[in-house]
Length: 317
Image 1: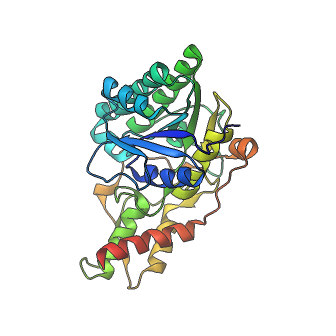
Image 2: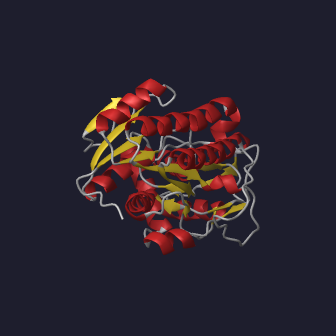
Image 3: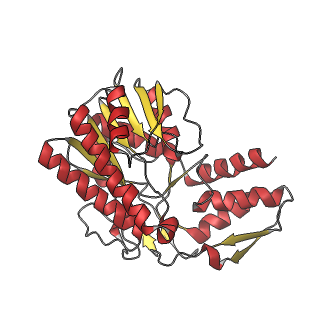
């Protein structure tokens, strides 16, 4: 077991959606948190240090990690949108795979005893039977460029860990949402539209992609708790599903959001929101993470989506 109290944790992509929540969770655990990232998004409050850094630049990545003298590294940076990966497959692979390589090589060079949490995706499992919960021993069958890149990044991370004796844990994180998520993703995409309609800025139509899809959706704050617990109590070299373990049909999610709306809204399919390939059913079996570290999702999906809607109302009010 590794206590984070007083330890140094370095987060790549700290200014992203998950990074902001993870920073808060790590600070609450007593860690000193450092981060790097790209883009115009402000870094989260509470960081000890912040550096603009592109993980595709190996020298900059090594310098950023060396400066924080980390006891642990959480690798969040990457291209996280499956939809965007169809438009930019090579860039997605380059960022997610080559970027992961650079981070691990930097750890090997300047912080070889640090625990590294490499955050992956449950999408690498590919199509699953309806009604099932997929466990970590299932076959990997990615069907989109994003999932393929995350499968390759995980395989690379575990291979480098074995070859060089690094302390690496990999996650296969299933869908997560919450306040602060970009509207490219499904729940905030719905919530943003509802807030626009309520404010009179849009007609009362919720434009949607394929709703005949079942996903495992967890609150990002529960996900952040899982990552902290894995840093403290996870088994080196292990792979962990991180998710609620329950399926939510997107049609039902949309209807639950519309029930929270302050005005009547109808649903219309939007061809522009359809993916070229989609998984009809993907729900995780979280037994391993429950057994090894005692984690489970605690925040209900209704609470999460209500808070996402309210966050967009505040920005549109």
